[in-house]
Amino acid sequence: MEFSDTRIVLTRQGHEDISRELEEIQTVKRPAVVDRIREARQLGDLSENFDYQDAKTVQGMLEARVRELQAILNNAVVVDNDSDDGTVGVGCKVVIKDLEDGSTEEYMIVGPAESSPSEGKISLESCVGAALMGGKVGDVVSCVTPGGNVEFEIVSVE
Image (cartoon, rainbow, N blue to C red; front, side, top):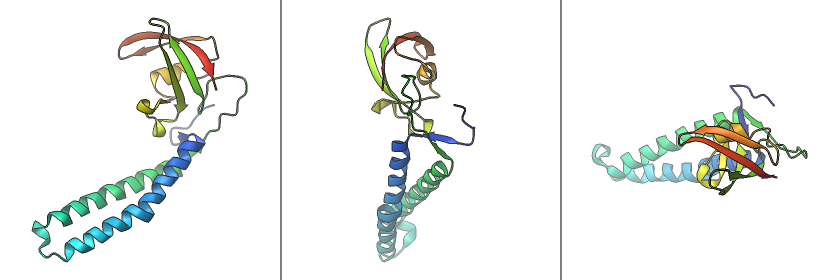
């Protein structure tokens, strides 16, 4: 599957998570910071009011995040991996074995916007993700990582 440069690949779960975060900011966090600003204004001189300056900074960060999330959702292509042929694609959970040390890792292949290696979610555009795309159980793939060339065997694909 080819993806356009302007489109952002998301799994269905990633789309739901981003939508939920946007809703929380708009319905909970934004009103709370507006209340903080209102309360800080009542304290008087705004030029030396730390609470006011801090609340305005938080408001600016929230508004930037709202714009970012809206841009992601406006350009999102939701990809459901409904392939039953065992091929690695977006949304798949893949177990790989490092052929050098025998260690195994489990990853979920996602789009760049929802990538979080610490949570086991790697981008289809990362070196490992790109090498795994289209692979099947038993395939040996190699990629160049910052640590050098690494070879993996695909152990399972869900």
